[in-house]
Image 1 (cartoon, helix red, strand yellow):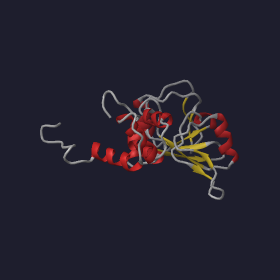
Image 2 (cartoon, rainbow, N blue to C red; image 1 turned 180 degrees about the vertical axis):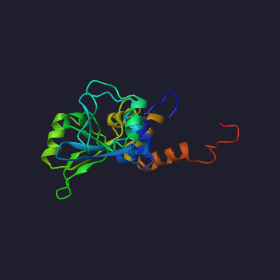
Image 3 (cartoon, rainbow, N blue to C red; image 1 turned 120 degrees about the vertical axis):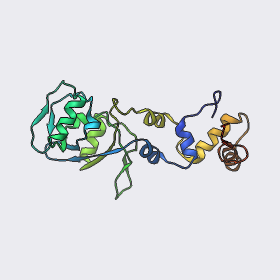
Image 4 (cartoon, helix red, strand yellow; image 1 turned 45 degrees about the vertical axis):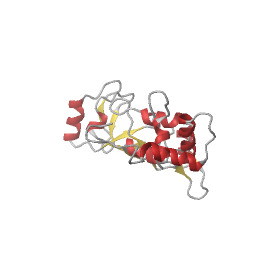
Length: 207
C-alpha cells in the first residue's frame, strides 16, 4: 500500500476480484503436456527452452531421436537451430514434470474432488496420484526458473487470503489497525484508496 504498510501483491489482486487461476493466467503462459505411450509430449519453443539444462536426454517426441544429450545446456543458437530443422515437440518423463506448477485446478468432473489446485507444485506423490487418476493432459505454468521466474506464483502460495472479502479485510486492518472491519467499510476504504477520482488524480505532472 505504501512503504510502511505492506501486503502481498496477490491480496491486492484478490481485492480487485481476481481468483487464483486468474492471477496466474495474467502473469504466466499455460503449457499443455499430453500423455503418450512413451511419456509426456510438450510443444517445443526455442525461446522457452533456451538455457535449458538437461537432466535426461532431450528427445524428439515424433522421431524418438536424441536432440541433446543429458547434462548439457541448450544454448540460444542450438535451440533456434532445432526449431529451424523442424522440431515440433519433446518427450518428457514423469520425473521431468516434477517441480513444475499446475496452471489450473484439476477437478474430477463427476465428484467435484480437487486433485490439484492452481499453482500447486508437482511432487513425486502428486505425479503418482495424477497418473492413478488417469490424466491424459496436464496444463502447467510456463515457469522455467531461467527465462520466467516463479515470483507471483510463490507470493500467491504464501498469501493467506483466498477470497476478495478476506483480502479487503486484510487491507483494512493494515491501513487502520485496531478498527474492526465490516465488508461495507472495507470496500469503501479500498474504493477511496484506488478509485476515487478526487483522491487519486494522476495529472500530467504525476502525483
